[in-house]
Amino acid sequence: MTMSKCIILLLLTMLLAYSCGLNHSQRPIIELGEDYKTTLGTFTDNISKDVFSVSASKLIGNIKYGVQYTPYQYHASKSILSDTSIILDIIEENPGLQQFILKFELDELETDILKYNVASHQEYESRISYLAFDFQNRIKLIEGSDSLSCKMYHFERTYGLSTSCTILLGFESIYDDKSAYASDKQIIINDNVFGGGIIKLKIRKENLNNIPVIKIKI
Image (cartoon, rainbow, N blue to C red):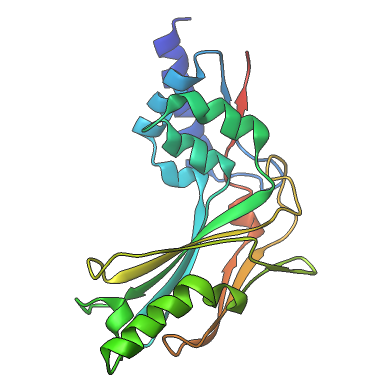
C-alpha cells in the first residue's frame, strides 16, 4: 500500500471513530512511522488540531471565562508549523507538567478587557502587575482528591490590542496522559480582578479520554 493510501486510511479511520462515538475506556491512537513529520502534518492539515485538546467555559456578566487543556499531543501537532525537529522530543519526553490556556474575554464589548471597570491609569497598571505576578496564587487544579497549585504561570501582555486576556498555566502531572484519564480536571479561579468570584471550569474525563494518543513507530 502506498504512503498516500495509508494516510487516507488513517484519516478515514479517525473520522469514523469520532462520528460513531468512542468507548471511553479506549483512547483513539494515531500511529506514525519514521516519516512521522510528514504524516502528522498531513493529519493536522485535514483534521482540526482541536482533537488534541479539550476546553470548558462559563459566562458571568460580561466576561467569558474559558480554559483549554493542552496535552503533549496538542503541542506536538502545533510544532509542525514551526519546527518539525522537536516533535519526537515532545511526544517521547512528555514533560512533568500538564498545561492549560486560561482566557478571560469580554462578551460583545469591543474594548481592552484589562481596562474593563477601571477608574484610572494607576488602577490599570496595578491590575496588569497583579495579573503578571500575584494572580497565580488564586488558581487551583482539582484532580481526583488532589488540589494542585500552579508550577508554571505566564501572563501574556497584549498592550490594548485584544478584548481578551490569556494566561498559560502548568500543574504537576499526577496521571500519565498517554494512558486513560482517571478523573475530571477542574480549574478553580478565585477572581478578585474582574469580580467573577469563585469560577469552576470542569473538563470531564469522558472528553479527556477522546484525545488521541500519538505513537511513533520507528
